[in-house]
Length: 278
Image (spheres, rainbow, N blue to C red):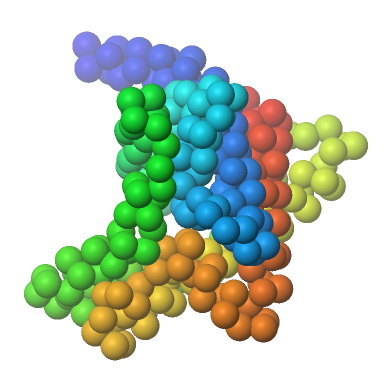
């Protein structure tokens, strides 16, 4: 009976896995496109532009009629990505693998996308009830990172834990740079036509590099916070970009990163289209 139930669960997972993945990856692509646009506005010095973080992207979409429709799609898509990742954590995935490392990654994705879908739904509810403002986005940016660092500092061995968080973020950045930007391993899960393969691969390499810059910068600021024992030194995406903009070399990195986030969004849309069938 147990084996029969397990087989039934695997069959149901296989039936739902592919469409969930495609919808979820498409939603991730739209999210990164909006993040990239916000980062470009930030790089241009547009006054009053939304915070460059996921909540800021949700709130930016909530300011227009068509954006609200996209926001609804994001809520559905991010929830789909959460369910897809949960299926991968339980049953593994024939495209991305089913070993312990992949199941841990899927578990992490399920948590992240579950939180994002809830955040998007909350922003949508706020927009429909009272109109959009950027309060939540500001609270979800540097203040969120600083509260997290402050909470860790209050725990036994808190300074060490802040260092660990910083090193993990830097490690994630290094992992993506090596496996995706350098080696292009993401192409193993894609099956684009030969005419589009080079463009998709180039977009993926560049996009993963841009994401890695954001992860690495956030990680560095956690390490700075630990070194100075000051949670206010930690930074989210907006804060990291702002710090880069304060240096002459940082302006170029800021622009490249902003454009890279847009390219990564386009890559995600291509991945949703060309992902190998699960």
